[in-house]
Image 1 (cartoon, rainbow, N blue to C red):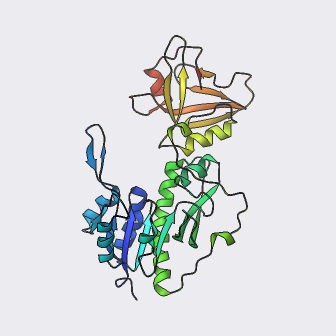
Image 2: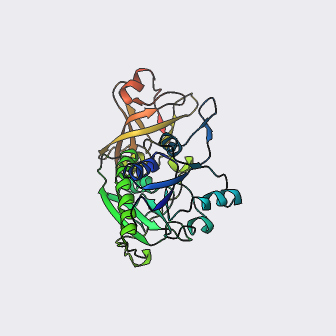
Length: 322
């Protein structure tokens, strides 16, 4: 079978999923349909917003389905009508067995971690938060439990100390597009092999990657400088780490932090103490040193570099964050 004969259904929603779809389309693979999330109201006007994958599919005249429920019989009939040989899932949602078991060659997923590490919804964020120095992408065949299927391919990339979740996301997105097409090629030529995750020995205990909520993003200043620094970059640019700024005689203000610097060294200050010259720097006392806040955002304002923020925001001292 050549790649024009292999009928592929592609499932995905965000920007991360567009790259692999682009690689398939531009590589001449036969994508017979795309499944993505329904349009959602967004922004101040609550206008219906199309997912990035839908926008790409429309621009390339690909058939689209946007089911509310994946077990809906009408949707299942439409999916069967596409007669997929293979389904590919990238950043979509959990599939019921009736969907993933449908194609004769199965369904594989692209996951943004080196499985079995970081199973779950936010693998990129947690790898950076935990200070890992490498991560990667994995393709695997779907089975009942989430992110546990047999691994087909893995590729590794380094995480630099200056990376944040955004830069790692973009690197893995590009890598993922190539790994998806390589996985399809291996399935096509019959050379595909897969390894049960139980047989893949992890050098360290398995770390999960649960969904991140607002409360997850609050900075704990009692931690060491390195951990606070990794936490901030692991949540940047989205959803962003935050802290509550307390000033004498004023209501607390939520401050989002996107970029920081490590300033280790004993300081003798209570954790959460804010130091500033009012012009160029804003530093916070952590367990074993100071954390310099370089890029921040006040409620209702845009993201600013610290010197820009301090030009229009006078800090009442003594200030602290918690």
